[in-house]
Image (cartoon, rainbow over all chains, first blue to last red; front, top):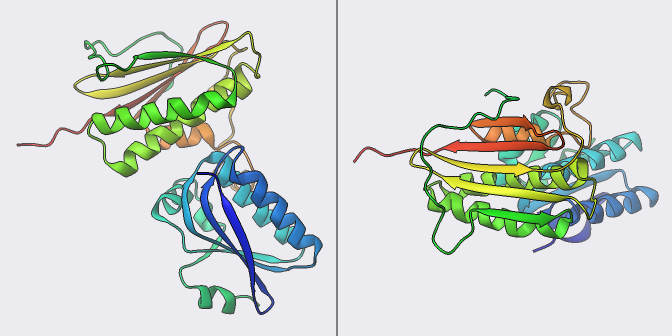
Length: 114
Length: 158
C-alpha cells in the first residue's frame, strides 16, 4: 500500500495525517510536496501524525529529515505524533529520535508550539 | 561486525530455502524488481523463525541493499543485472546481493549518526543493514560489489 496523506487544521497548527508506506518512490515525494506547499502558504506549525505509517525505509527517514529542515529553515517548527513501533525503532537506531520533537498525544502536540 | 574483501563464506553446509522457491534471483536494474525480493526475504525470515518485527526489518534492509545495487551500483543500466542469493542454514539466514557496478568502499560512507551528518536526507541504508543484521560483509567482485547480509537464528532450549 502506498502512502495516503490528508491535511487538517487545529487552530494555527497544520496536522498531516499519514498512513501506509513512506519509502523511495512511494510516500516520500508526496510528503515533500505537501510540506513545500504548506510552507509556501505560510504555515509555520506542522505536525506529522504517523499513526498509520506501518513501514518506512532509509529514503522515508530522509524525507522526514528533509521536511524537518525545510520547516525549520522557513522559520517554523515540525513535530512528529503517534509513532508506530516500527517507525520508532528506526528513529532510535538512527538517533533521529534525538532530532525530532515527538509526541504521543495530539492535544499535547498542538499545545507544545511556542 | 566486520567487512571483508575476501570471498570467504561460512563453512557450514547450507540448506535449500523452502521447497518450490528459487534460492537465487537475477533481476533487471529497475526499481520494480525490488518488491518481490523484499517479499521473499520476509517470507524466508519467517520460515527461519524470526518474529514479525525482525522479519520486517530483515526485508527492509534487503530492500535497501537491492535499491543501492540498482541505483548506485548498476546506475539503472538495463544491460546490468542484480543477483540475489538466499541461503538458510541451521544457524543463519544469509542474503547476498551482487551488482555489476564500479564497486563500493563501505568505509567511505560517512556515519549518518554523527552530528554533522544527522540532518542529511540520505546515507542511512548501509548503517541500517549493519544495525539490523548480525554480520554484513562487502566483497569486491571487480567489477561489482556483493553485500552479504547474515542474521543468526536463535534456537530456543526445549
